[in-house]
Length: 239
Length: 239
Image (cartoon, rainbow over the protein chains, first blue to last red):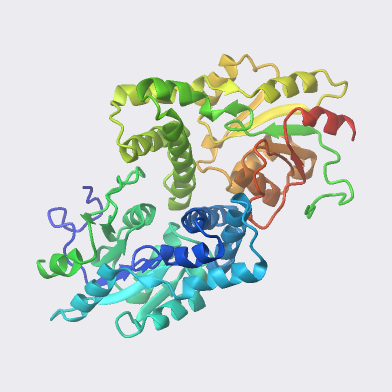
């Protein structure tokens, strides 16, 4: 895999002093909302959740390019409106608000819980942070709901730069907050496009590929590919 | 529908002195390549074409945001590589090159041919142009293959600004080339996100919604929604 811009090409995952996690899809399962969708629209929960999520991402990219940023709460609500319309599901505004509230109580993946516990127990534990498209209050509610405030002290939102990932200004937020060079920051994401954006920016990128997807063809490769977040503490300890 | 930035809100489609068409999906059917895909991978042509197209668009947005523009030939080739890998279709590089060549000989939609003929026959025919993500040689080959050089004299590619739609710098190309204010340019696209980007920029937008899709929830609405390009000459003549 490519290691351009690494200080030491022979050890592309070396010298990581902080780990910055993506939130949605990496630590937290966005499809936790399927059950709620399925209660409202029996048998349609999975299709609704999938289209909602794909439009949510597309709208974040499109609004960034259009220079028409609105926060991720709004993007999430807009994407849900489109998804209901496209699937011809009659969903009142109150029902949509209730569904979107589900983003504040998403469940962590099992491997995320295990990895965070193991990282906290390491003798020289790296500093842990979140860098997410989510609006600050969405993220704070989500971290508080899952009692992760102590485990992950730095929670950074794109909202302060008014553009979404993978714009490099977003990744720069972590460099500024953590006061570390990009090459000393390990960026952890299960979203292939986010991994590519972070690698292009200059982070050491650990791509969590739970589903065995092909790598995204965006001209850069993650430094390491992991099947599960459970591999992360061992990878760091061995360095 | 919204008519913000229109000179005359009561007549949002008025005073159109030029029509600028999107190419892929609007004049030309990108799924013309399904038959070729199906020859190589029987029964998989439609799935391959759909995933290829969706990744092609995503990569154009992501590379624009990453500041890593490559031309649409490369984006198209990259997206095809990903789609073949994801669908576990064994496709040699030579086969992929041959498939991607299909973008140079796409077929126009029937309603596109009819509309262009009718527009050319109008007594005060508007100037016609194309503004596309395609690389210049892709577009020129496509227009020449379909003998449209005379009907559409201005063919503009995003390549000269090094970013893809819906970045406003792309739409500005048409204003500069046609030397008309945005509000006097009718922008015609079947891609809802492109229609939104063009409307946010300030064009009069005619959204060709052949499939009865819901409007994209991107904070702006097209000025007019048409079921077919065949409605276009009548709409202009009635103004």
